Amino acid sequence: MPQRAWSKKRERQYEHIKEGLEDRGKSEDVAEEIAARTVNKERARHGEAKESSPTSTDDISSGRRGGLRSRKGERGRTRAQLYNEARAKGIKGRSKMNKAELEDAVDG
Image (cartoon, rainbow, N blue to C red; front, side, top):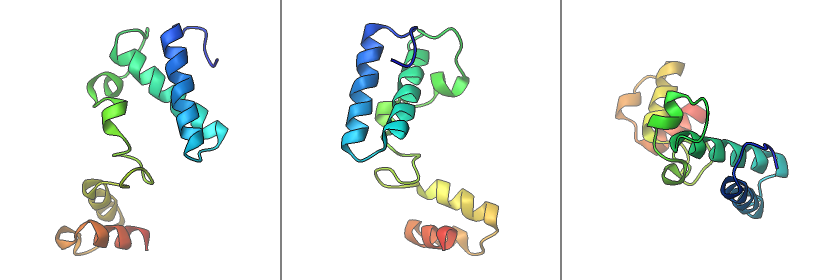
């Protein structure tokens, strides 16, 4: 187990998340990191952690988010994320682009 401060419930949660990620093809190191971050965020949201960032406590839950902010997750980046990346890169005409066009412009 990565930490001794976790309860038995959080240790089970960590293992469950890690195994699920490995089943989906993530490497063990990546699966361990994602699982640990998820468990730590849940601990912060439920007041189990001594310290927590505002993002951990005020943001949507890890389970509900489900890859919304992931670059490769369920449906990739959101249109808003792509738009902000396009703005940062100075891409012209971005406000009239749809999600697919923004993705092509940002990645291409």
